[in-house]
Image 1 (cartoon, helix red, strand yellow):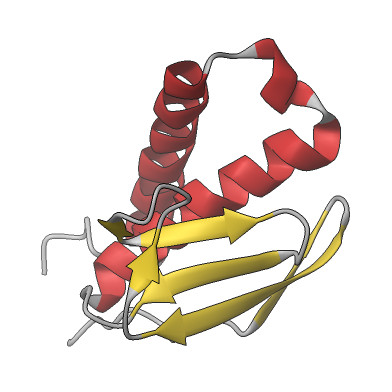
Image 2 (image 1 turned 180 degrees about the vertical axis):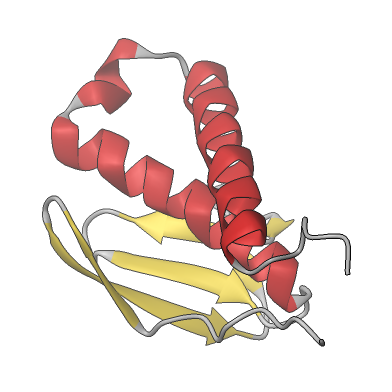
Length: 109
């Protein structure tokens, strides 16, 4: 049985409303550095690079959605920038493991 990652959705509904997801060729951070993905609270858009594998796009999407959840809840202000990144990484990794399990990637077949 071949297991496959599902396509990245174009819209996700967060606590603050819909979040559009865009796959683009080059993603730049606020400091104009190349990166895997970004969250724009003002636009309510997550941008992901097409250069990543589908699994890595999902991990990056989960990371950026964690930023969205922190922004929507007002919790972003409780943490330093490094703390926000660490928390978003932890959430993304946990959600990716949940998705691997749901897709049966952990089943020894």
